[in-house]
Image 1 (cartoon, rainbow, N blue to C red):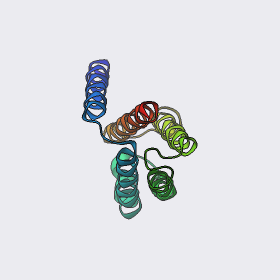
Image 2 (cartoon, rainbow, N blue to C red; image 1 turned 90 degrees about the vertical axis):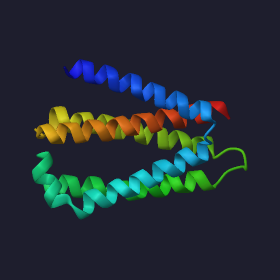
Image 3 (cartoon, rainbow, N blue to C red; image 1 turned 90 degrees about the horizontal axis):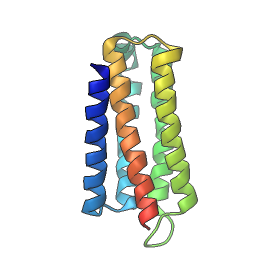
Image 4 (cartoon, rainbow, N blue to C red; image 1 turned 120 degrees about the vertical axis):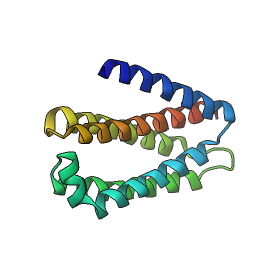
Length: 147
């Protein structure tokens, strides 16, 4: 069942990434959206770390620190979306965002598979946010390549 879920999720992500790329959404807007999602997730994790800890089967301090870590990430994404030439944010900073997103996904998988033993809801939560981050990284890469 999980491979069916993974396959349908992968094809949905590919479709979403293709639709966004075809719609011509700018790299700056993708970076801004990525920053907003980081702030939203950071606020959720920080403000509800105690509740989420029990529901997800993850240590409270881990959830809290993951949330806090998202704020500097959001600042970098916001900065990257705002500077550079009119047509293009600085490629080096965009690459830093893409690499950071990739690291977040890897850490998410390690959290789920090696470091902790999350609940079923925790596994779904970790997978869902990792999928969103993968889609954003792909869109950022495509936006950088398009420019």
